[in-house]
Amino acid sequence: MNKTFSALAEPNRLHIVELLRDGPLTVGEIADRLELQQPQVSKHLRVLSDAELVEVQPAANKRIYKLQFQSLKELDGWLDSFRRMWEERFNRLDDYLQQLLEKEKKKQFDLED
Image 1: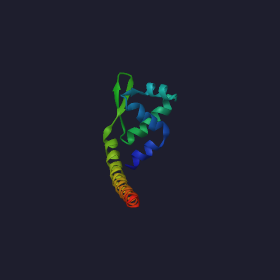
Image 2: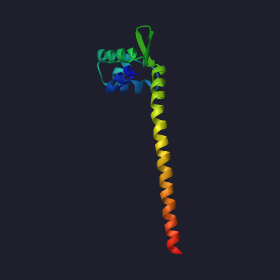
Image 3: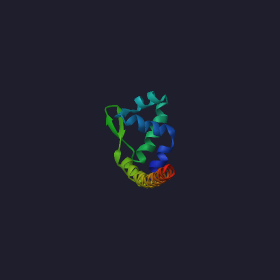
Image 4: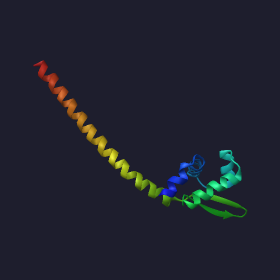
């Protein structure tokens, strides 16, 4: 997973992954959309490929890149543990706030009597 984080930490590589979310692209298409030189994009794609975030499919004289979802699924699983932790904390906070609200309502009711 360290490879995944390391690869995605660089903004251009993150943008490449975001572009590929919508479907496969050639190196040239990625370069055009990010306004980068093709050799620079190829280096970023090599890093993303090494991190198993993208895969390449040769088609004639072009190389078409698309997302490889296994690494992203592993990342999502890791993030899910944090989501569950925060949901539990927010649920406890909600319970606490409801208790405070009920106490406040009870105080107001007692004052009206």
